Amino acid sequence: MPMIQLTVPADVLSATARADLRKSLPAILLKWEGAPDNTFFRAQAWCRVEEVADGGFAALGDDLPRFRVDVTVPEGALSERRKAGLAQEVTADILAAAGLPDSEGLRVWVLIREQPEGTWAAAGNIVKFKELAALAQQSRENA
Image (tube, rainbow, N blue to C red; front, top):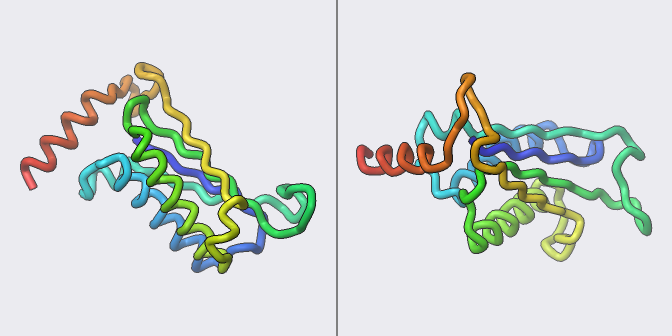
């Protein structure tokens, strides 16, 4: 059930880089959630790369690009260690896609939002984190 959205100024990333990030970012998110790498969980990991028109997304001081990553996960899905790992790997992936060195990491902000239990629904039903965790465990045991 995780979602990851990258907001980036237009024309900073090539079409290939955007397509690659739409695949790599949700894969990174699933990895740090500890979800099984299977068809069901991959289909539930959504990613959106949104380009903002020139001048619509910037900071004071210079014209180099900024990147905002919004991550939404069920409450309890990520420990502090997993949040840190997710932020580090997502930042490195975006910097590489943009052709920027690791030293430019402050240009990437990762905002992790935990969706409170009982406030996430899919297929018309409330999704419970403990049910997802049980499904993941069962999937691992059957693999």
